[in-house]
View 1 (cartoon, rainbow, N blue to C red):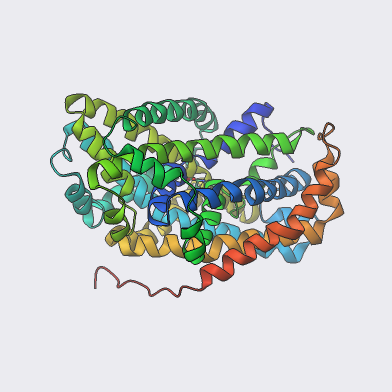
View 2 (view 1 turned 180 degrees about the vertical axis):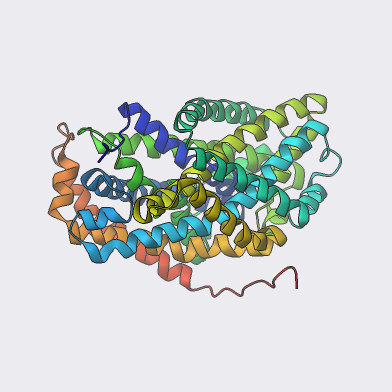
Length: 447
Ligand code: TRP
């Protein structure tokens, strides 16, 4: 047997995890979920959820991965809890579910790289989005994005991904800071900040079912939880470093990228649409594309260059997340069934392309897939993971987290206690509130 791969350095692990976490979830979803779910009320719940639920939950996945040193499904067997492999399998399923529409949005980003270069959307950004977000065009670019993802996974350019990630996170931060500074100069920015940042408990208490499930699931989605990704990544950790401080770093960096994206998009929506109601009416998916595109259009010729750079960076962030989504499933199929890696990557990519044509045909489908993931799939998967680590593993998990946490002797037992109490309650509450809404499936676009 060949020896299992490990991360070369501790920083390598942290950056890879941040690279997986930072993606469309931060730059595209976070601002629009904020805009359509109560602004600051959403941000408030999201921040609480990231720290109080997201951090303990990411540590739970790290503990499973580092202890088992196995892929996300077989890890449960390795830990002598074979019945729990269904949790790993559910995670893989959710990863595929999400990738099917993630790739459609990735296709939009590709389109906007070119649209920025030619200034195609400069005249009427909202109409442009309407024209390119659904239909044959969107299907084709969704195909291109999925093909790129599958090709990279098939050829396994590990080095490439790692290096791209190291460049990507700092450049995203820099570009977002620049855009946020520009956004701060726009008319109506005070209203935008008030909507985004001034605590609004009234809205929260009036609409808990809108705010809480989306905000909590946003924390899960953005941290790549519930899909075996963090189990897989931590299974490559060699040695006993402090998982608590690694997890803390990852949560902070990831949250920062989302908050910055909001500081860009929300003021732009206020400046160009006088608020967020248009965005809300359109289901929200357009927020990033219309708002940021309007800003680039205002900047004129310079806007083209800025637009190309911006959407390229978003593309790299989206690709690096999509790659790891596909890689988690691919590595399992390859390990378990001995199928050829290339065949697996392209086969899965092809299948998910077909599923994603629904979302590419009609953004109502995209919203439906996204909503089901947020309201049902992610909370269920994280809940099962918490029950597994909190009860089925219990003391074993505490022992594993203790390793390397020398300076924080009480952290591990406190963490277990947190998992068993309010992490559990928080996720359950999210599910109950979210299940409230029954969804009608949209019509199939091609019939
Ligand atoms: N966190 C990524 C983002 O914010 C998307 C994502 C969710 C992901 N789950 C994942 C990426 C699992 C890789 C693996 O865009």
